[in-house]
Image (tube, rainbow, N blue to C red; front, side, top):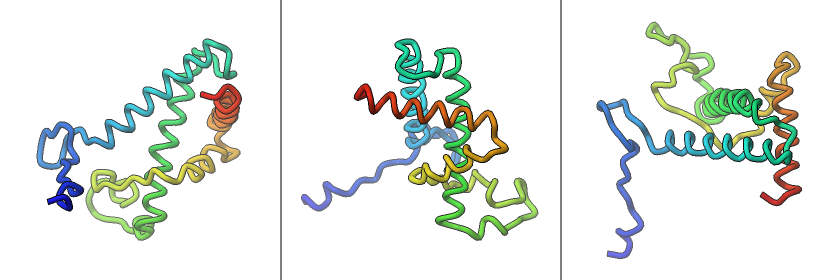
Length: 144
């Protein structure tokens, strides 16, 4: 009996609209994390703890969210299914890397997202990466 208590049958959908479409628990976790980050960075900007002005938080979060999504997908393809990089189909979206409807999101390799954001051609993203470093230093300095 006790061994059964450790097993669960958690449904991946928080709200399911069709057989394959709905709001999943990990999607809610991402949304919650982004909202908490937005509120925290905005608050730190108002208190002058970070050099990010409260009016810049939306732009900063947009760059961070795009970095998380692209980096997460590329991380999944690179570490779990590298064949996606050279697999093409006759169905939309043609390239398996872009076939997000099939699932696959890596979320433990933040370093790879940072490498994408630090690319010299990404001037705006580079600015936000610098702000991210200042934000991390502020958090460590003030103990948040």
